[in-house]
Amino acid sequence: MNKSEKLSGFEMVTILTLLMVGTGILSLPRFLLEASEVDTWLIILSGGIILAIVAFIYGYIIIRFPGKGYFEILSITLTRPIACILSIPIYLIVWLIVYYLIK
View 1 (cartoon, helix red, strand yellow):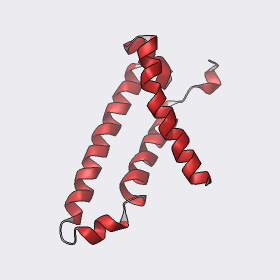
View 2 (cartoon, rainbow, N blue to C red):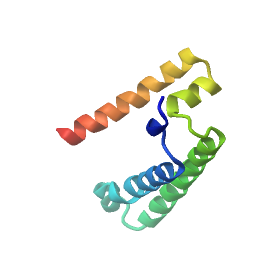
View 3 (tube, rainbow, N blue to C red):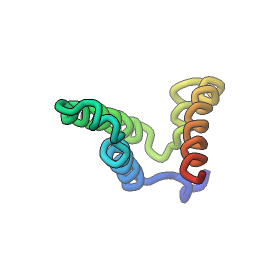
View 4 (cartoon, rainbow, N blue to C red):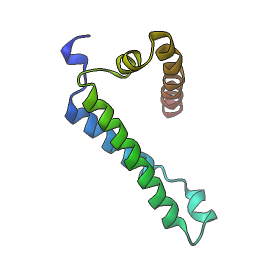
């Protein structure tokens, strides 16, 4: 893998920030607001806390394996066949999201 194909620390921080903002605020379902009339702020707060924890874990993993990609990190921590198996759902989710956005 060329050096230009690897993500820098700034790019990963940007991706994590966009993940938190996009998932936590921009894609908040409207039916959630209508269904839970009073305690909506608790749901938003708990979702934000969960996203912050996940972002912290991602950041920690990125710091532990600088310059490595997703599949490389899985291959290092697990065996290569298990990394392939665990990568399939991620790639399917990405393709489904892309399909949904293009459609």
